[in-house]
Length: 115
Image 1 (cartoon, rainbow, N blue to C red):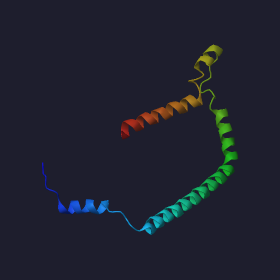
Image 2 (image 1 turned 120 degrees about the vertical axis):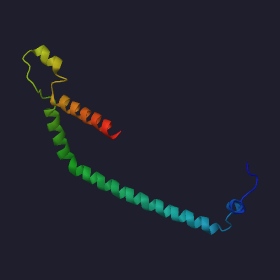
Image 3 (image 1 turned 180 degrees about the vertical axis):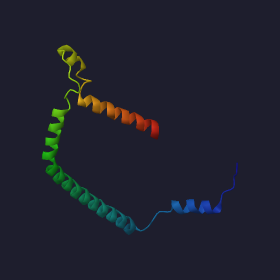
Image 4 (image 1 turned 135 degrees about the vertical axis):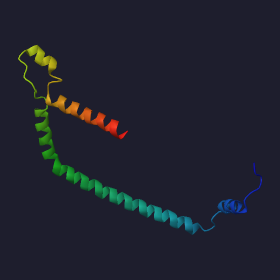
């Protein structure tokens, strides 16, 4: 173990312990931080207003598309003549199940290839 101190390192630590005597410096720093905070809040507020306006414009077509999708998803892929068998296979025999299985297959493929 070395007991000698590097003079340059000791000078850096000594310089870090000195206090800044100018209170105007701290005041200027706090003023610039406050002005940056106000600018940030204004930008985020403007972005929020723009996002809400876009959401209001897209809401009606999105609701219509979701309504059409929810009407299409439970459609059976294969018609089954027996009622009890049709009820039994309903969770698997639908467009939603096919989409879910496709999504899971793509996810599994992605995990095997990229991880």
